[in-house]
Length: 78
Image (cartoon, rainbow, N blue to C red; front, side, top):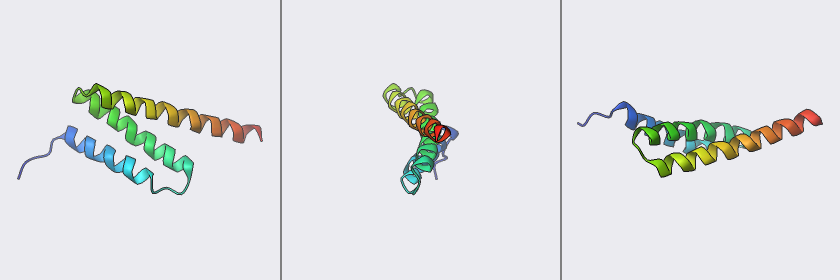
């Protein structure tokens, strides 16, 4: 059986986080878990030198952080 290296495990774990994020009932939990998965995908993509994968996941991280911050700010003002 072929050995799986750390980088490949990182990619699988990132996939698992992103996929499981869509099972969350709360949009905040979805965004948090999805952000964690996207950050791991950025690390994975940079490691394997896959710039398009890194860029789209970095964009996803930014979008999630924007909406999480916006919601947190809205809760503070009410």
